[in-house]
Image (cartoon, rainbow, N blue to C red; front, side, top):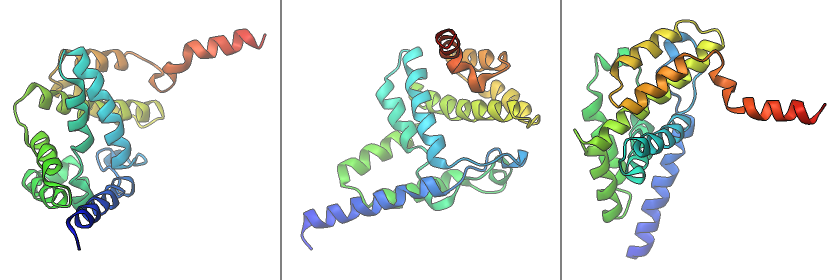
Amino acid sequence: MNNRKKIALGVVKFFSELYMLKRNKRRGLAILDAPPDSIADHVTLTAQIAYVLAGMEGLNVEKCATMALFHDNDETRIGDLHKVATLYLKKDSASLRALKDQLKNLPRGIEEKISNLIKQKDTPERTILHDADWLELALQAKIFEERGYKPAKEWIDFIGTILKTDSAKRILAQTQQMNDFTNCWWEAEKRKIIKETR
């Protein structure tokens, strides 16, 4: 097999594995008996939240969003563990091993770029990723709380204590004050619709 075909095959295998992100479910709010979303759902929202938080904090939005896009790729191999499970398992080392094996399918330069992004510790961009990851969970918990899963409020309150950036803290505080976060996005449109149909 020539080198170009070998590279293409590796990339195809990597892309195939990405679809596990759609099939694997998140475990974070399972303790509430709330319906699970997929890891892909979480990653998509987290990347957009990271982009916005980075902009609000004056950081590189593309870098933060890219970090968020790949931050849970290891979960195609080890699954998503809820926080109780992580008390007993060394998820960080397993995550890095899984990611390293997964990235072997990519061309060397791309493999190194992704690996370097994920391995970053104690950087402002890593802080954004941390906050985006947790903020996405808090916003999902808020939706569940509004649907009647009352224990979700404990998760939201807990997450409020571990967010690091002012932007993430302000967003969560604003969200907590709302009675209908789930539908607040279309309030203005709803008024337009009502006005136009009269």
